[in-house]
Image (tube, rainbow, N blue to C red):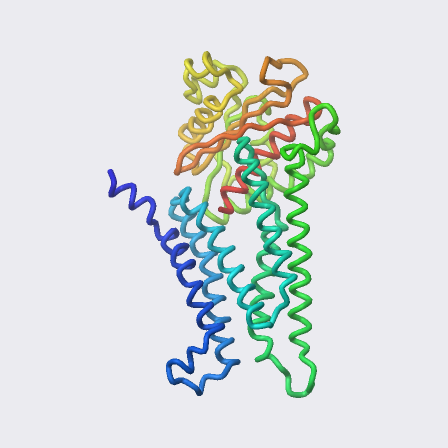
Length: 379
């Protein structure tokens, strides 16, 4: 038993993640210490030292893609990997930025902006996790990371990229600052995106004062975009998806199958509007329905597991909730929805509270379910 648990923990992707963290000190040593002098290699210039450090940084950064690819390809996504992978990225980026400040290549204020963002986002995620809410990451965060990596590499090699025909002016240095400014803008925008998404969690809005949910047109447009992205990512990764739906009545499967080429990734969906269908088709236990009700964590977990087992998909999402206008019970107002997700690593569920009328609640549920697919497909 202990051996199998160890094997599950030390997957190839997790080993690469840990190795990435262990290589960070090597990068820092190569960049800021006089190791050529220590080793009697005085022929190695400062510019060559910077190039070598940049090469190590690029290799470490590229392993971020590799471990994610292996985890998805081998169906070995683990909680340890989900924790360590973003941590490794932040350790590498922080180490590189602080090393550049130490070398007086970069002033401290860009580093302060980047680190402040990381602390704020980490705090918001902690508050969300304590309330059982998952805040979907946006493309701003991914773009921010890409531009930060490019900017760091450019600052590492800026003294090497001096063109002889333009004396006393390093255009590459100016270009490096342009990329860094773009990274900083994306850093601030991604932070604001997290704060806006979590404003109700932080107490800046409540049910009595908050505006109705997003408009139907806005939701429909976002759903089309996210459904297309789910199909694209699943098809590219060789992953198949399925759905189990109660309150949405098949809208999630409909959004996915509306995408051309969706047959490569979408196996199907089960609409379990009645409890008898939840029991008969998805294997939801009568005990769970009697004790917790259809709108519950237990029901959502069993629904997504049942859909995955019945349809033979790599992963499945399930939704069960109260779309309104009626159906509310004490502790479960209109807009209460449980969203479950199951894959080879197990099942998990999140509690959501949506605003708006019946159509808006249903569409927001569809969008959140698609976000679940996107989060796990990209992790």
